[in-house]
Length: 118
Picture 1 (cartoon, rainbow, N blue to C red):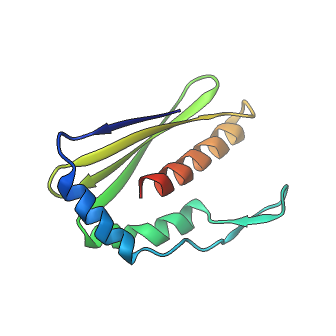
Picture 2 (cartoon, rainbow, N blue to C red):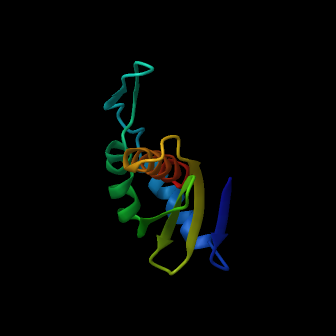
């Protein structure tokens, strides 16, 4: 489940995001999932692919985690220098009720949300 919120207008943000996307390339598959033996782009690789193109167009991303007993939530905010913003909250279930389980779910949430908002 995802929840989206925007500033009253996002015209400047969308224009800047379109320009930034032209400069972005797909993130490198720099990690391996030992369970499924497949390669994937880590959170670091995703950030490497988007940070400079976003900044060049006056955009930045922040992520704000929270959790309850069964889920982690990641609110991702894409903001423009004009003050316009687009924000989305992604809810991910925690499969293992310990620090590693919550950390893993949060990393997934951050990676997926970052890719989706960009």
